Every structure is written in C-alpha cells, then in structure tokens.
Image (cartoon, rainbow over all chains, first blue to last red; front, side, top):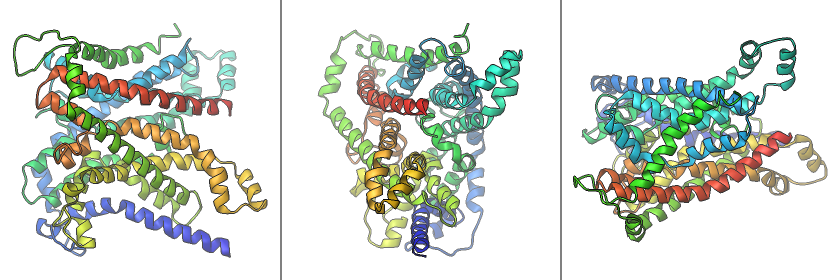
Length: 271
Length: 282
C-alpha cells in the first residue's frame, strides 16, 4: 500500500516535470494558431479563436523552397553517409582490419574538431569552385559532419550479429553477398534505420554551415527562420508557425526513433 | 583487400576534414585581410601573438568555458533527476518520456528564437506574463538566458544516457541491498551513483563536445552581446572571418580552438574507450 502511494507520488512528480519541460513547445504550437494581436498580450491569452492565418502567411512568404532544400540536403547526405559508413563499420567490426581501433578513433576525432576551425579553407575552396549557395555543397559537408557518428553507430549494431551464425553460413558455402543479405541485413536493419534517422536530424537542424555557405538558391529551413525575423514587425505568431513547421519533421522522426536515440547520440557507447 | 570497404569513408573524411585543417595551419601564418587585395605576406606566428594578446579572444575563451560548463552541469543535474523519475513504473511513463525528450528535437535555431521572443521578451514573453514583472531577461542576464536555452535542449540528452545507465543496474543486487536493510538514499548514493559514474562522465564529455561549438543560440539570442558578454569562440571566429575579414587571425584562433579541443578530447576518448571495454567484456 505504502509502496504504491509512493510510486504514484513519483509518477505525479514525473508528470509535472514532463509538462513543465515540454511547455515551451506547447506554447509555440498554441501561439502559432493565434492572431498577432492575440499572441503579443500580457498576461498571455489562453483561450482564443484558433486561426490558420499564420501558416498561410508563412507559405505565402515562400517557405517551400527552403523546406525542399533542407529535405534534399538531409536526404542525400543521409544516403551518402549510410553508403560510406556501413562498409567502413563492417571493416571495423565483423572483419576487422589491422589497427581497426586507430581508424575508429580517427573518425571520432574529426567529430571533435570544432567546425569553425577548419571552416575557412572549406569556404575558400567552395568559393573558388563556384559552389557557394549550392545544395550539393551542403550534401557533401553534412555527409562529412555525420560520418563519424554513423560509423560508430553502425559498428555497434554490426557487433550484435552473432559470429557463430556468420561462420555457420560460411561453412554452408554462403558467399559475402548471401551472408549480407540473409544474415547481416535482417539483424542490423533497425539499426540502419536509426542511424539514418539521426543523421537526418543533424543535417536538418544544421545552421552554422548553412548560414555561411548559402544565400538565395540553396538556403535551408533554419535560414528561413532567421531571415524571417529581421524583416518583420509584429511577428511572434508567425515566427511560431514557421518554427513549428520546420521542427515538425525532426519531432516526428525523433518520437518514432526515441528508443534508438540514446545509442546514436552516444555514438554507440550506450545501449 | 580487407581494407577496401573502409577506404571510401576514410578517404572522404581525410579530404573534407584533415586537408582543410592543414590548410588552416598554413593560413594562420599569413597576414591576410580579405578586404585588402593583393599581398598576403608570411608573418610566422604574428597572428597567434595578436590573437592570444587580444582581450576579445581571452574573454571569448572564458565565455566558452562558462557557457559550456554551465549548460553541461545544469543539464546533467536535471537529466539525472528526470532519469531517476523515469526509472520507475508509473501510469503514462512512455508519454512523459516522450514529453521530456521533445525539447531536444526542436530545431536549435527555432528553440533559441522561441526562448528569446516567446518566453524571455519583456513585454509579451511568457515568463513575465506568468510571473509578472518587466525584466528584460536577455539583456539583464545574457549568459543565463543562453545557458537556460541550452539546458532546456540538452537535458533530454543527458537524461537518456543516464536512464540507460540506471536501467543497466542489476536488479538482484539492488533487491539484495534492500533486503539487507539499506534505505533508498543509501542505495542511491552508495550503489547507483558509483554505477552511474561512467555514464555521467560520458554525458559530460559528449555534451561538452557538442556544446563547445554552440553557435545558433549565441547568434540568435544575444549576437554575442551585450558587449562581448556572450561571445564564445565559435562566434568570435565567425565575426573575425565574416565581419572583419581577418582570415589569418581567424585561422590562428581556429588552430588554438583545435588544440584546446584535443585536450578535452583526450579525456573523452579515455572515457569512451573505458565504456568500450565494459561492453566487450560483457
């Protein structure tokens, strides 16, 4: 009885913490359905006639190309990352090359280097090649940004493939392709999906490279948000609408993949 | 032959990250302002001397440490609290967990703008709206405003890592301690915290690696101000590069940041490889 009561007190505490923590997001969504004059009141308005006016405004202001650029940069870089990282992770786990741990740590050190430190040469090269403001530039840079994460994550998933099964397959005469298709892929495909989702999230949210390397043609959705506020007067509700739109894909992806999130973010160190 | 699957990724990473860094090393020895066309004389270590004796860079360094440490420490504490709450069964646990990770999923620049305009704003922000007063949070407490936003976004990350740590505790051992008469606090401080130590370290170090690079929040909440109160190294280098066009100095500052990160990273690698061994022995 006492234990039960105690548990429900903890439960209530957890609920309160959760609600407080998520509240700014709820507030953002609520505000996005307000008229501007209702959004900027003090004390805050809780009851109001919801309107889609802000969403219409945001689309009128042409958010679509920004969203498409983000989608392209994120999807293509994710595909490229997975294509590069999976074979590399294979060579660092199931069939380890000599000095595999050196290569593994090399990948993670590239992640530790602050983006600003190596940014100037990248900027100069991109400019020299005439590739500024080009989505494919972003694809390549996001690929390199996510590569270490993906290698570590895929390696941790590949390590879960039981050696015995692989060896049994080899004894039975299964070639590399067969064992990849019949043994490895079915086991690691949830991990592959999680890796892809996390790379997608990071690419979608990236701001520093996007703000410095894109101008009009290749700007991604974070840039839309920034450009938006500098040119507006009363804009809170519209800002919230835009912020809700650009955050939505990642919110959904993250909710779906939440069980795998921790493993990706800790580069496979925590399960 | 065994190496073949590794090579594309390895070569790609070297070309995109290492070669530019070597070039940064070279640029850091040139006196090069992009607004001044023509010559870029080789000046040995002048840029390093300029940058290291520049009070702006020193204050940026201090700000980086304060912002990073503040955000990491507070998000670790909150994350631990939430992880402990989530570690027990209660009605709607899945929903609460989803609510608690949501801030991490909001686009960082959107989160920063949300806090700045919808919450911190002195006239119509939610904080003053709920609690009264007319404090201009961002200009009165710029560092705290940036840290709050970062803590809000990074607590879920810490929570997830620590929750994984809590759930990897052996239940039999905890039960045995209970049977032996240990109370909840004793179990927490004597058993759970030591068990969590490597997870706390991992969270702190990964959090630092990500947060040292904080750019979005500074860029959009304070623009590094007021004055240089919240200008951290990434933002300072950005200003040197794209406002002052001092390419040589920006490169030197970048190289210094890399060396500082290497120091932190050495610790990080030790922790991560420690976790590795645990995993391998399991």
